[in-house]
Image (cartoon, rainbow, N blue to C red; front, side, top):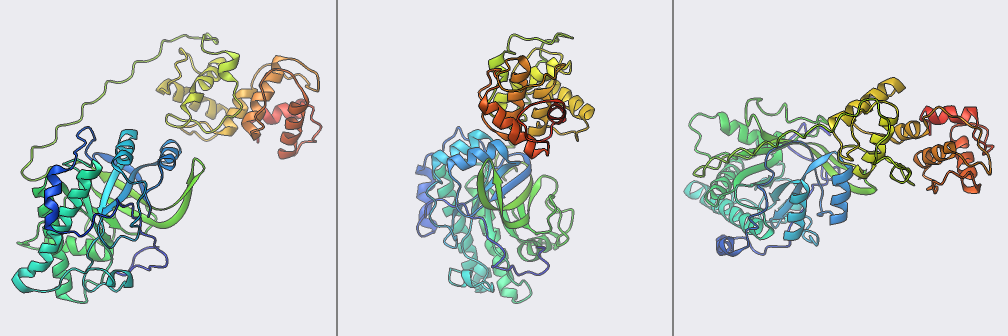
Length: 474
């Protein structure tokens, strides 16, 4: 849903709030814990340098869920709400220092968020029951500025306890409000964000800000271009604009602001996605961020560039390899495989490509550019779209390939039976024991496959069945 007005529909949007355990009342008294909490100095700055897809969801997913999504999903960034009394998800049984350390070690880029006082003129009932930013104009919005400092102090205290280190970006979530309704409402929100940012800088953290493109983000962008604006702006912005476009652009703000590497965009609202057998209700985001320089701190040094991996030894037309054995190729399951997913299947993949004279290097078990090049050649010759991964259809075609084509029926023992058993395991998952013997279970699996590709289910593998297998049908 594209956010054409400054209001969000609470019935269609489930904000992702991955929060830490309740931090208690937020105030300046929390500053003492900032310096006593463990720093977990081995953790990297987060979200750090990243461009790609991210997600956020109300409750922090379990470790097993995060691991499954790390292996199978396209996401590498995750939003986590760590503090603020306006959070919908106050119970965060999974969000601990160990959880944070594990996700960072696995390569996740975490985006910590606070959801506290909201704009005084918000129309959303949920936030009307919570603390709001004071609209008092006294002392140049002194109360709003004090609230912003307190939220920043509380966020840093929680971040340090969770192992989110100095230099990381902490985002404040200011939900949609009507910026035209009240000058005091908009100005107090602006001064709140100013103090949030300045306090974070004082404590060694970068300032981030999340809001609807049509309200909070547009408010900031107007302040950015205002001559002699007194406000300190956040280092990074997170734009909520549900236009279903995986980029950081928005028609609600000017294109030159917070560019480059200082924007993220939530481009799709709450919906279910399933990866690795785990379903989570998420918002989708596109992230393009680099670690900002915090005023008063040294510029972060560049990350060392790892040397390019050495090419595997070239073996030419040789089709055998010491690592290519019956047991290393035979599996009861063959599924989608790429550089990050099911890497245990890289050995059989390289062996099969080598047998077809496509991979002319030593079998390493590591996904390399030579493997990808050989895979692309196979896909092109077989008439498949070129993909950077192996599908189950690809597996069926690769596993059944060969010069043979023996008619297989009960009692036959042959290398062709081994090929068929492997291909059937890839096609339908019967989990056959690959032994080269055409027994009752193999015959039953062959009949099931024949039915799935609309061949007479005789259980006998002959010309039509071989043709279907070699075509990768399933």
